[in-house]
Length: 289
Image (cartoon, rainbow, N blue to C red; front, side, top):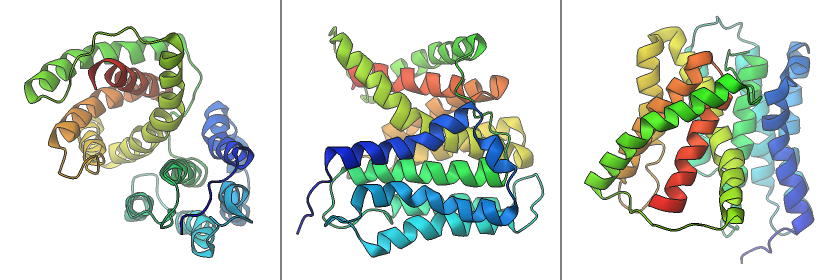
């Protein structure tokens, strides 16, 4: 039986709580958490499960298995990284923690059979919170995670979008991946696309692939190889779009990842990469999809 959808109030409060760490940590809130003791930091990770209980507790959509995972996963990963006295360079524990987060998303550990499609977005934001907490608070990775729209970040973000566009247009046309639509969408549709893409796609994906993954890879591989590998992994993360392997999507996403990574590493400022990513996705979805 398909459980009833959660009410609007539950949905709204839950997603506010999911976005809160991504937003407030982007304006320096993580510094207070970094000053906590090791045990407090590890146990504090359990609060990341709060959105799940707000959304589902007391409804037919509540599952104890998912609730346990929502609490245990962030706490276990935080303990795994915090009690290990890890060196600054990327370690096998970092790779294992990132791999577990990826597995939780693609294996749908936080989604239940018969549940509504919004659980995929819930899982994405929840796991972004987990990655944010584990690697910015626990590991204190130099992710450049600031959402402040400085002039330099705006300039770099727009510049990298301009550099990527000719590649995307040429390869997209040659492979048949894009189809130009000559339309002038309503301003509300454009604004909605910008907000949704910025909050639910660009922020969590750039946090993970550039702020955390590329940053860690640089400590082992150097800037150039880290950029290429992070971009390839970003492209491959789109493998599930469609029944057959979407090689066109993977190819264009991998190349896009190069320019997102360039935007981030120019000043180690995540906002620049988020801006480039948002512009690429919005232009594609409105005029080339």
